[in-house]
Amino acid sequence: MSISPYKPEYFMKQALKEAEMALAKDEIPIGAVVVLKDQIIARAHNLTESLNDVTAHAEMQAITSAADFLGGKYLDECTLYVTLEPCVMCAGALAWAQLGSLVFGARDQRKRKEEIDRIGIYHPKTKIEGGLMEEECAGILKTFFETKR
Amino acid sequence: MSISPYKPEYFMKQALKEAEMALAKDEIPIGAVVVLKDQIIARAHNLTESLNDVTAHAEMQAITSAADFLGGKYLDECTLYVTLEPCVMCAGALAWAQLGSLVFGARDQRKRKEEIDRIGIYHPKTKIEGGLMEEECAGILKTFFETKR
Figure 1 (cartoon, rainbow over the protein chains, first blue to last red):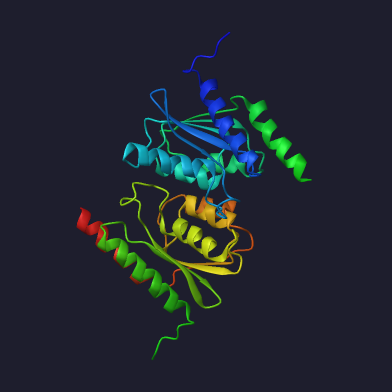
Figure 2: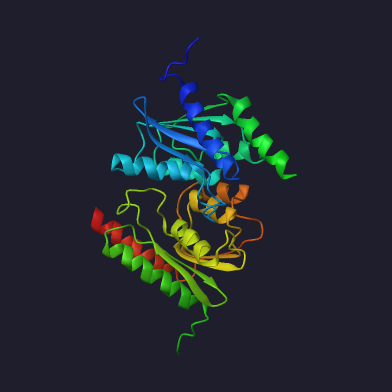
């Protein structure tokens, strides 16, 4: 069975490729792509260590890059694919961007998640799907943290 | 009475100067400075319109700039002065930065504030003080929004 470039799995694979690039730099392996009408308009991976910058999460860079490509701040027609469920900072940024759709891979295990979900950080119009290719997305993180112990 | 450069009001005045720079660019007037041992190591103001980037809040740029100055990601010995209470995105970023102290001017009026406070987005070690020079900090925002109506 061939993979169509238009399936969500195709785009998550591209996000995973970004995560692999982060891993190669000894960064926590998280990757993201922004898709508009089946076209990838931005790619990014976590660079917090390389840039000495806590704000350099994959999603933050992807938002900036996509907005730059579009020449506008809002990503309401875009889908962001990211290998890990966004943190509070990134969720807040995606809300400001009025993101159209969010698809994430691995689920965040932090205990505050339910409460954060409940207060609704995301933009009310953003469609959210979690757990796509969860095993692969979580696997690369697990491998990274095992080597750090 | 002279203003000592070491009083919180001095630093908030510097953050207000940044807000005025934003205003001059027709940006929502919010400014921030990062202080380490009574020295301003970063200055920034909101540039979301100029940069077409929802992540270009004053605090985000101040964090990046301060970390660049320090050559390290963490701001645990720093105080960030900002003219408006941080949004969820910025609060999340300040948590990642393990900010030492936060001093903000105007209070955010959004209805979710209490809930966000309750779940504790900020780093547990960050000391938080709100309402410093609140009138001036809120005033510049009020003026801006009045001209937009």
